[in-house]
View 1 (cartoon, rainbow, N blue to C red):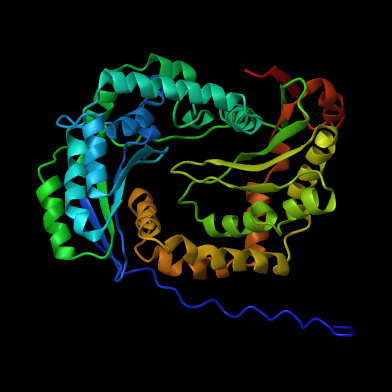
View 2 (tube, helix red, strand yellow):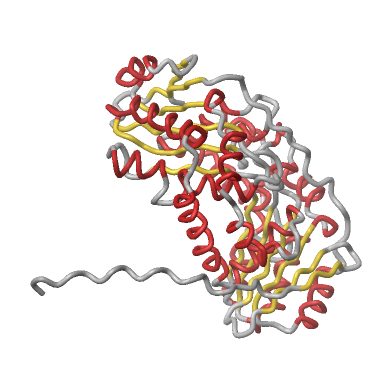
Length: 453
């Protein structure tokens, strides 16, 4: 309408109160910890069985055995071959999965409530009596090796791999992917999987999480019936003490002749999951590069047009994982993008994040917080860090208050302590012939050019 003015945008209201569902935790006689999270009205029920059998529980010569062991679990049991196992899950209408990370392995399924106990029965059989078929092992091993090679043909995955390799020293397992290296996966044999399973898949180190609409006493009885005879304790994870590969700022260019873009990774070793600076670090890194309206994305994407998107953040684990800025830029702006990124990291210290920037970051974290708990799978997954890291039972009830309590001073302090630009590793995957001279002219530190694998 001519002459009409747009009404002002309504202000966002205060977030509605959220309380994580009440849960109980009991320990069965064999050491298995049972977590029950009743969710009235839920149409599905989710069961997670979490074990201290992630990549941190394997020795380096057998890197990748945790991932292969987890994958093999869903290929059958002593009683059921792969086809019969798949038929059993289809008959129950359940989805069964098994995977591993650095800090844990997890077997899980989701089902209608009436199929919870049959699902637990099948899960228990899968864990205690795995088939470990030789042909399935060879198939999955070949797939894993193919995945590694394929990932190296992708510039983003190659940048991630190179960043890990050059960030941590040779004694730190985090310098490789949790699923192993080609040479370690290639050397794995089926008996390595069998030994890893026998040592690590034990109830004393395990947590069964059930979330959904169920009768708690019936679940306790079912857990005891199907998993109560499971015995033993395992060695658990090793202690990882991350060390940097070198001191001082350095640059690595992975040469991919003909590339029209450069994948950039810029960062350093960050924090572990129990670091007392966790919440200030989360809010600070969100404001810096963890959402669309962050400094890094606004500068590199919106103002300069160097990229379709840029982000940064921490990856905390039991030990200190990496902090990194990730983006892909046109080849011709590789050096300017690196310069601007270093300036943005420096700026987090010299020009601390403002209250307005932090308010947006806090609002973002508070706003997305309830979304992760919309399904029973999300709720069960939220119990996992409590089990793995020993977080407080009220962790999720107090999460938003911890986020909202982060101040400008907190953010400035963790930026000073955690973002040390004189120590950052800079990785660029691109056409070295086109980018080397300009990147070298930035004078950021020793520069190494390596061929793409």
